[in-house]
Image (cartoon, rainbow, N blue to C red; front, top):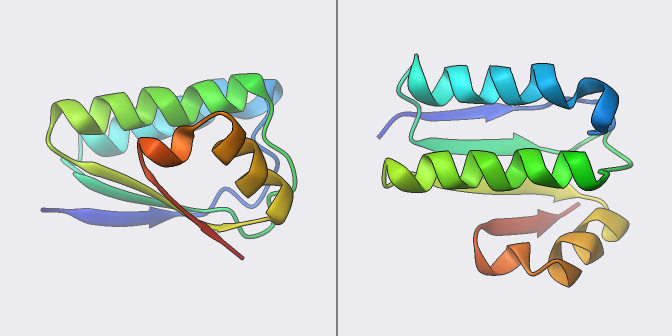
Length: 95
């Protein structure tokens, strides 16, 4: 299994999601990454489009028997992910 950590260090919102998703998909498809860890240090907000990027990335990794992990989520982002039940699909760790 090939593992990589990525840290966007900015809010994951509609204005940046297209490039972010493309980068994540390239890692999985082109580089063969099967374990992806997204470090949310410095990320204060994730909007609905951003949530979609996490879900799409999880789905792509799942097809390859891979795994998505989110680390250093703020309390608000952690709560959002739990409310959306994303914690049932991939690991989410606070601060």
